[in-house]
Length: 302
Ligand SMILES: [Zn+2]
Image 1 (tube, rainbow, N blue to C red):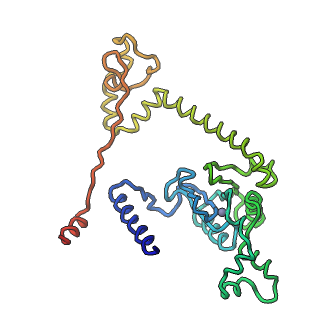
Image 2 (cartoon, protein in one colour):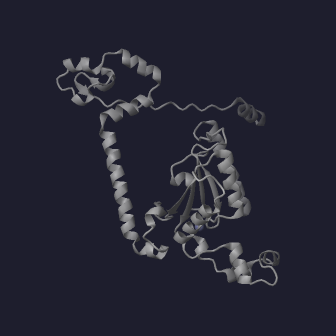
Image 3 (cartoon, rainbow, N blue to C red):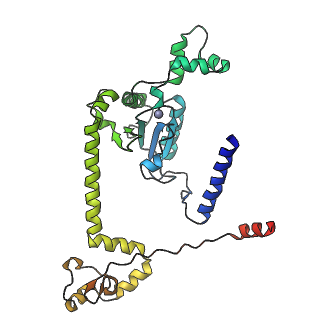
């Protein structure tokens, strides 16, 4: 079973490498500097994927993870490196609903530990329960925990004051992210959950607003032209600009739309006779380039 998992992962890496060769996967960042001066401190929960949640690419931001997005001394070590060596200006503590750290039973966990771990965590003569607590740092409330981590970072005062510290809460079930600044009215996660339906409704309205503006954008012919221009190589645009302007055509056309005024796009592009035609989107041909080295390897096997 274990070997199957390993084999699967390594086979997927072969697929990944193949996609990179074909330019279907972007590895992009040659530089180790992130695209945005942002660091996330989030939980190790496997449902959290910062790049997917915020529609980012590899190389865009720093991400630190541990159980419960807790500011530990080792997290601080990494944070200081990103601030002073990579000019990070935002630290975002991203906690999440349904965090496993709220469900840990320390006494049961203690029973599962190997003696050596137990000896490391619980030093002789001390209170075993508080030693376990100090080591594993479980918490009961995700919202309060985010605020505590923010407070610890702010109280530390060991880095420039222009570094902004924020708290966000991720809902692993809906995909929504809430700014904790907007959740100040809620004392606890329990309190939040009581009002959660209203909160989600507000977020859904945000989504509808954003969809409406997206739709308006796509209906706006200027934005369509803009998109089209981005899709075609600069040389083609030069050629088109040399052609007649749309205003020239309007004099010939009986039903030319006023909304296309002042654009320089050619008549061929937008109109045939007096009819508007939506420009065709050019889909670039993807050529599969098998590097010589791979071909040779394959040949040698035959
Ligand atoms: Zn978690």
